[in-house]
Amino acid sequence: MVSRVIPVEDFDLVIFGGTGDLARRKILPGLFRRFLSGQMPKTSRVIGAARSDINTDGYRQMIRDAIAEFGGAEKENTAGIEAFVGQLHYVTVDAKGDGGWAELHDLIRFEVVNAFYFSVAPSLFGDLAERLHTYEIADADSRVVVEKPFGRDLASAQALNETLAEHFKESQVYRIDHYLGKETVQNLMAVRFGNMLFEPLWNNHYVDHIEITVAETVGVGGRGAYYDKSGAMRDMVQNHLMQLLCLIAMEAPSEFESDAVRDEKLKVIRALQPVEPHHIVRGQYDAAGDEPSYREDAGDPRSFTESFIAMRCEIANWRWAGVPFYLRTGKKMKARTSEISVVFKDLGHSIFPGDEKRHRNILSIQLQPNEGMQLQVTIKEPGQGGMRLVDVPLDMTFADALGPDAEGAADAYERLIMDVIRGNQTLFMRGDEVEAAWAWTDPIIEGWQARNDVPKLYDQGSSGPDDAMALMHREDRKWRDIKG
Ligand code: NAD
Image (cartoon, rainbow, N blue to C red; front, side, top):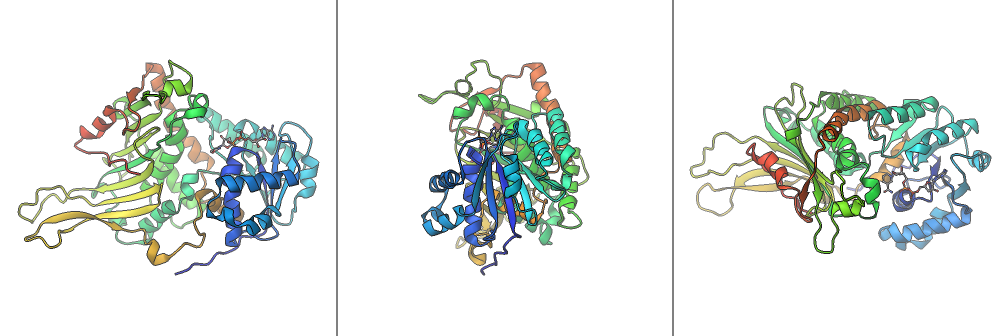
């Protein structure tokens, strides 16, 4: 089955910070893939806007180089690259100065969709928003895309939201969390709300616990000093893991529409209980041979920032009361993986003589490195005499049956950028969601600071500190193995 690619409306997309790492590594190569798939209209334009003193020719070369460095198989398509860079423009602007803004105004076509991607430090959001209005570049129909970090606590997130709200309505603001752009995350919603099979079981009567693990093999490396100001809780849990938790735990929205979905996600965050200190394990990776420790990478021998966190959370509502949600994320782990597992309860009684093993259905959803979905089911072991049972994974990815999806191998960024152009905010975080997430996170972080909480050391290439294992073991549960 080959699905159709539906081109989006004609647009002009301005990328502030268009010469930066994120733009070169993710945004432009992603747009190039949308261009090749036929989704980006031939008249649409992408305008890089940054401080670097280059011109459009220089920018086109920069993006050719970026595609060569960061693109996939499509980087061999030289004719495609030339056609794509022909749709790129560049203007030198300073967010804090006045040079370049009039030129940007003259370049933009106001009769098409206008979107402004703020791929710059959040401290510049206010300056950009203000100048976009002073120079009459943005209007009530423009869209603005912002990147994480969206604040570092509730107060700073509120300040950022207020800054944006001075110039844009909430319906114009697209806060990107690229985890939500993953095909499998959307498939999770399709599986939950498009089937009769799962939803009746999706509650505390049938679910034993839910686990969300996001493990990376890399350390903080060259970004150590920057990372040390945030840590795993701010960098991963407050945004990515909480967003995944919301999608797993939310009630069915009345329709698949942005505010209906986001209202339900917000209710989950608001129902999250404060977490007891003994339900949290923080860790820092230790040195291993020539490989530096976290503290060496961070450049602070006394750093108390966590490069790993495991925690047990609870959602206080009728559906989930009593079901633990175990979240875990860390750097320098044994494999790179992002996985959500819904572990159903034991049968309670087996009718099969001699079958003493605990059989559990587990729905597991992988987001990276490969996207996929499996349901562990119990069947009879083939060929054996008698009724011997075995647990096998049922592959629910169905890639072979469905063929390549309409957006090809669209990665999360490019999918989300196309949603901005379509004006669909469903997969973007709303301001009140971000604030509610910080309101839950802040007291946890303040507790560590008040107690001078020292993270436990863990071995590089491991699954984190032993205490993280104990967090589940003491409740007679076990983390799933971290496999790439
Ligand atoms: P970067 O330092 O590589 O690039 C910054 C860009 O901003 C450059 O194009 C620079 O010219 C421009 N810039 C800086 N000051 C400016 C000014 N006064 N006026 C106009 N332009 C100015 O940064 P990056 O890694 O591309 O990150 C951009 C934003 O995205 C940051 O907020 C970052 O936290 C966030 N982010 C980055 C990544 C990533 O993978 N790089 C991932 C998630 C979020």
